[in-house]
Length: 316
View 1 (cartoon, rainbow, N blue to C red):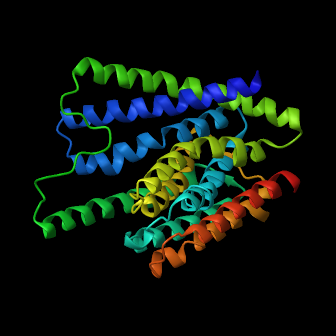
View 2: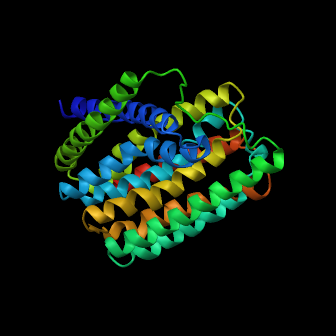
View 3: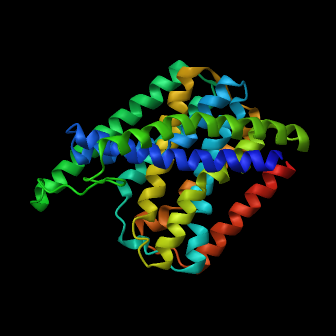
């Protein structure tokens, strides 16, 4: 039953996160907030809502290893699995994705995150640093987007953000918001409780469950989206999406969770997992700076590296 509860919690989380994004996006647009700001903030926060609620619930239930493991494991999975597995099915044409600036920001965010982890705990001080970095990056992203639109001469014709529906009635917006706000904590609670039971049953730490089961579960939407995009030959922006998601995980999720309560860092993170996450990030250099596509050979290599990492997590 515990596996059933874990799966149910994950499904509720993902569906509630999608509902929250749809409701929040359309509410913001109805209130007159520009589509550009909605895309860079509300959509980004909304799509990371499941991971955020998992981290907050983990802190409240006294299992911070799941919170940190979820972020570190998700970032590793996003690069090795979310980019690797779809590339086995069809080449990801990442050479057309301009993501050098975002990549540099992600590396800096990763280094700062690792440095703060060596303090032994993510507390309000750490959270303030992480959220300040996030605010700086978002402000620059907004300015860059505005400058790009002006240069292209279409600043007045903003693309609608994901989940936007100009004809959505108010009652439907409220239903989506209600489902999201109720479903997220419910799904997170089910998943965290199940993760604790599984950790005790298999004799592993909560950190291991966070790095594997929880992290892989919350990365499934990105994996499904990238796989379908690869099959449709539309995966040009997959690299940029993964980089953006990883930055948001490091800065926003742990940054916000740090204000809910302190997150002690398991020594195993400092010895192994954080460096795997950083190493996986560095593997993106050929695709970011040398305009390489992620072909099937790269896809197989990245996927095998992820499988090897999971085996090492359980064995060591």
